[in-house]
Image 1 (cartoon, rainbow, N blue to C red):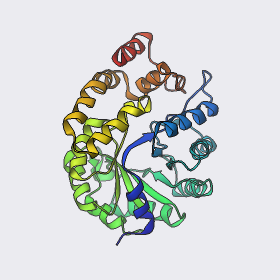
Image 2: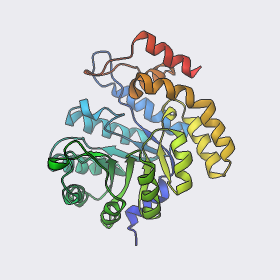
Image 3: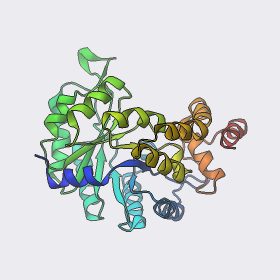
Length: 307
């Protein structure tokens, strides 16, 4: 039996999920006005789910107050027109994550995505971390599921949380899903097989080609890549997938994703994404230290891949 909160996420989060890049000014300060306009652009384009993330939204270089303001700005700008999942930081104590979850509830977010901040010692530490966050709020909690570095005798190893772990934690009423970022096809298949119809799984690879496969395993949603600057392409692709027109969906991938993806992986995904968005007039490509904009040569390569 799933909870009403879990059902809400399963019913509403389908297809492309749009991560929210944080726009910066040349001096490294956040351009909140640009952020508002960008969220409104996505909503007007037909986006149904927005996701603030640690990576794309640059939470690793923001202060806690800035994180809260980014979260608030996204919720406020969406204005109830789509699902909004905000983020908590990737580091820090449980108390800090709980504070962000309570803030997310207070601003009207539909959910919050949380990242386990330490190394892997056992499942129970991780279970309690997310359980404590869930118990502190009444909104949906999603887990950023990625490979975790092992601690102690497991040092140097990479641990993936088992499908059974998620089956167990899904018994908590407001733990509603995951952003799947292990990038392991065997685990992705098992997550979807075991958790289907009880847990919202958002594929985190950021490419249509990954969803092309995972959708056939029952995965309901995926994080977009080029959709940040070409939302209409991702929405058209999902429409083809829903109508089982797989040949047309595959053609969309070949024509729109392949070349940009090749260059973006070479020069750095998030940096290339910002340059693409700047080229489209959606937000400036400035970054906050220690990140820097791409070189003129790499910037030119990114733009050429789009034309």
